[in-house]
Length: 205
Image (tube, rainbow, N blue to C red):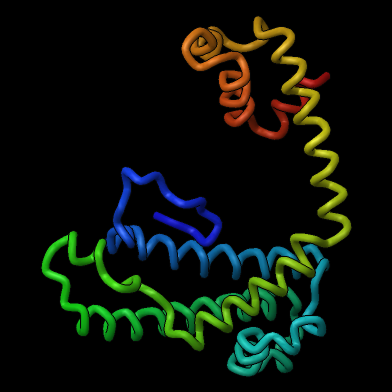
């Protein structure tokens, strides 16, 4: 399983590509995350259809569902996201069938050593999804209100880390027992990583 944000893998893993299952997971995650983030951004009213009119994959989805005839905003938003997912999944299936037929892998090693991923979007669809990703980055993920919230979260996470680092006895014994082998900082990070937002807030009180 890989993503565009992975760092270069350790030399222990010398394969060019992951398994077919991993490739399916990669493209599925990419499609799902972007479409759901699009819907979340519209639900939160941080982005709207007017901003997206020049994003090809969004505009085409709106045309396919005849969005102008759908009065309910929630229905229009969810149907648009679903239409984008349906289009990308269909495109991926068609492109991958062709790539698999041409490569005709016989063993897992054939898949790992292939010149390209065998499960992927066709170039045009990949470019359209990349355009949506770029839009989401600049208009949703970097939206002023989200950036401000992220800075607040960073601050209270830092405070929580400092509190637990100075008073490790506040952590359950299960996590404290890892301190000798993994170090205090690693144990604190692992403990915080498993917290719900509500529990983390309570720990800071």
